[in-house]
Length: 256
Length: 326
Image (tube, rainbow over all chains, first blue to last red; front, top):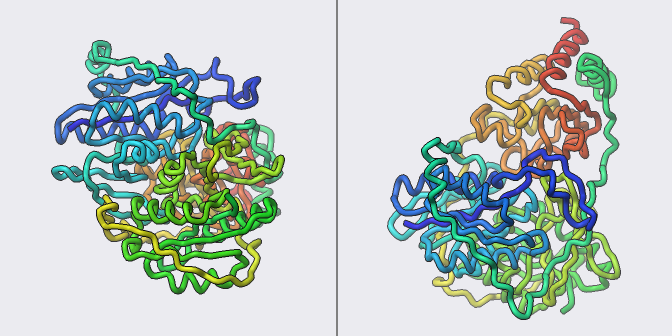
């Protein structure tokens, strides 16, 4: 079985963020980057499926040179090889343009399954996977908690709202978007890190369509969120702040 | 292209977010001076049609077909694709439900468009809607405009628009029967189920102490547990804590857990990702304790302490104990 895992490199969670001079994205120079968290769970699920059913796990990533680090880490965890779509223009792409790049690279692989995280931690649109499935003409399921393979059919447990779930099944090839936290993540072993250095990473450059495809969505500006509420900050040492908060609990909101 | 089409969600009853999306649609349609149209898909929609007849709408459609009895991405995408082709609206709005997240990106792609997902506000500039959405887990907001030819697709975040602003009225509800064949639907959905009976009902709690990633490891949970016990509060958590098994799933607050509206919600080490906020922003008072002053939780907090929870929480527990006189 061949499984493609589409991963994205995003700023480390809780990074200090500054808006860049264009006003449309953030300063990236001083940021650290890591694998998008839901994608890490997609990778883990792919590795578990490979352990169970055999086959190959191929990492697919679009991003600048620095994304190579995230790709190596995925290889060190046990992925077999990788395709790196080298591009510096991710920020200017809309979902269609990014999904088109990923889908055209994935199409050549004829994989049985394509897994990816349910959304990215930076843009949070939660749709690149679904759009890829549409472009590739294959069925999909989103917010997947469990994956079972039976012959040419994949059966998945989907999360619905308010604590409800549902199993659905579909023929392969199929695309699944994986929910965070569905199984513990493995660490790369020393042996894995060593092996990763010799694994194949194929670099491809995206074909620029002629004429260039027009944007469907433009970001006009980004900004710090407007506060909906005036937060009263309680300051001082931990003991002082705690004493002020206790007063709030007793005299303002009256729960003690 | 003319009209604002809102695609609602109904399954043995309305998904309440449908009315929020319709209210938002009503406001945008008025600003654009375009007709407002609503549609819902399924098989058994008589009751839904009855409800729609009492709304202030230019037109309303029940998209009916036996193959739409159970939701499938293939069925709903194909059905709504045909409706949109026949109505040619300029704007298609959805509530940002789990179901919409499943099919709307596919539907938008069929029209060569990118869905503007999880929108929190809609402004108007140069007679064009500006969609505000969150980036980086709510640390930033982005103003987006539709640039393509063809219809614009946008989904609206839970709680971002007020359903009580929806104007009542009357309208004739029309049936729309899409052409669907069984072979078009590639996935087979099973029964919907709940994992286990929920024994903890957080929705009834008047005081909740909730813990997030900031607690770092399971061994630290008792620090927060002790505060909850001292206050006589229910203990709750954000998703990562329950995913890790540090607290049971039934104590999870957020879009995939319980929705709560206590008198006071104390968020400890919770950054305030959107998925968490939708589950607790109905709280009457929110108190946040977090080391990051820019954490989105402070946007909904009435009171906040910026500091190390490992110092603040034990101090708070001690102070509350003293105030209670024991």
